[in-house]
Amino acid sequence: MDLVSKYNNDGYFLLENIYSDREVDKIKKLVNELDISKFEHSKDKTGYPFRITNILPKHNELKQIVEKPKILKILKDCLGDDIVFFKDKYISKKKNTRGDFVPHTDGAFITYNYRLKKETPGWWTYASKFIHLNIMVTDNTIDNGCMHICKRESSDPNHYIKKYFLNERSVKSGETDPRFHEEIKKKSIPITGKKGSVLIFDPLCLHHSESNLSGDVRDLFLITYNRLSDGDNYEISNIDK
Image (cartoon, rainbow, N blue to C red; front, side, top):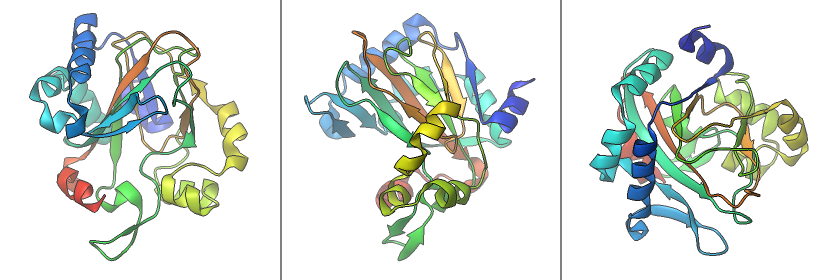
């Protein structure tokens, strides 16, 4: 099955050896050198910044490493349109710190938009299709808390909102109701790979991850794009936040 067919059928696929060791080591080095006070970020209970958001728009050197023509073409083919940057986040897991993420979708939630003065459907306020490029900056293993993913059930965010979001927290966050967690975990598969591998997936694919139980840090760089025909929505989506 070719990559586009696999994406259309399953909502995700893994590609190995897309980035060289030198390239991913450079990504990690440049991120570690960031002044995180200049970026939106989250820290765990130890003060370790486990998430840094929207780096590429402010860092051309990283952008040049990440946006290889080969990978951009694959993303374009999967969406059936040219692509435009929407957001990114660098996620780093240390042992026994924040790192377990319950089953959820990305971007499918209901929130009140004060600019539009109405409730809106998360990312789908801005575009009709999104795609994730998930770069493994370190080896991703079961022990260090790799992502687990399910086959896409629907391309409609409302499918997930109506089926899995049965309480106010779920509706507003995109996290599935706790009653579904075990069911989702049983049908998900772990995505492991050497550093430099990439997982390309639809943000609507249910996914989760466990805590890092190893002595190694698990890092990934998740970049999200939308179809060019839906416009450049990076700035307006940040204003709405």
